[in-house]
Every structure is written in C-alpha cells, then in structure tokens.
Image 1 (cartoon, rainbow, N blue to C red):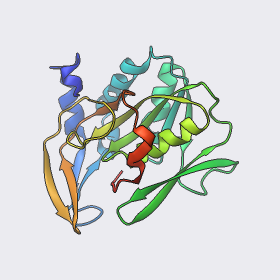
Image 2 (tube, rainbow, N blue to C red):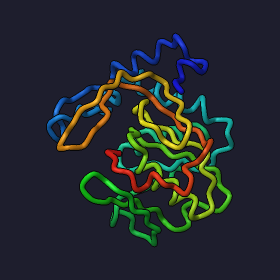
Image 3 (cartoon, one colour):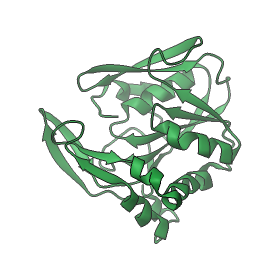
Length: 219
C-alpha cells in the first residue's frame, strides 16, 4: 500500500525524492535499469526528507534495534536509528564482521549469498526494524528477518527506499511513491523494473516459514 494513500497524498516531498533517484540503464548487466540512490544522497533536502518519512513512521513504535542490510542499508539505517533512539546493527556479507557471528544464506539468480550478524548485538525480546535500499522479491529481507528472529528479536517492519509494487510477497508493503512498472526479460529471467517508490513493510502475515528465502531474486 502506498504512503500516498496513507496520509501522504499530495506531499511535495514524494516527487522530489523520486526525481533524486537516478536510473542507470543496462547496469550491472544488459537489460537491467539500475536504481541509483547515490544521487539521492547528493541532494541534502531529498535525503533528509527520505529519512524524515521513515522517522515519522517509526518513532513511536518502541523500536530498539535498526538493522541495516549491507551495503546501502547502512546509508539510511544509522540516521533513522539516531532519530528514534535505537541502536544500529549492521547485517553484513560473509567475513566482514570480526567477532562471533550467526549466518543466514539466501538464494540469488545465479547462486547464493549470505548475511551475518554479531552474536550478542541483539537481545531476545528487542523490537527490530530492518532497513535496506530496495526490495524485489524479498529474499534478502527474509534472511535478515531470520537472523533477528533466531536470536529472539521481534521484527516489527522492514523499510526500503525503493520497492517493486507488483511483486507479491507474504507481507504488507507500505510504499511512499507508486512505481511505474514493466516487465523485462534478461538472460531468461523475468524481472520487474520500475521507476521509483519508497516502501515500508508491515509485520502482518510475516512470511510463513520464511518460504520466500528460497525465491530467485535480485535483492
């Protein structure tokens, strides 16, 4: 569900955020329209507005952990964590964290990847928010949720700057900007490409048995 339908309809920040995200055709592979959020980071006002929208949503939810997915989740997560009074926990790719870790593997188009989190970074019963830049089919978010739930945390929502509104996941999505989507075939894989949207994720119907962790996905 788009934020424009949930109290932000007509908000002038939405168009500016959308315009600040650059689309780079055929990167990193032919046929892919890469959503480049580095241009959003160059625009102080659009960047601040993006963070503010997240903060407005989460400041009163009693969240104590903001978990950012490597790497672009690191660009938004710490600012949100500071603003809502939570700690920031990085979810990193293998062999990046120096201490004892727990790991969660997930499936990509051409293999698998993995997220790791420091043991002891999150305590049982803590209320957590997962941050990333983009959600496609949700495999990365599923792995992040699994890591947090394995240590006893309660994942309240996931929040992503860019979302694919036509992808059907087993959870409720709260999207700030509606995307203009179209299908593209690349290397025999049907991919959903779109303009820009801001998305949040609600905890309703939380991924039964985390079944989407094995889906083929881009992010």
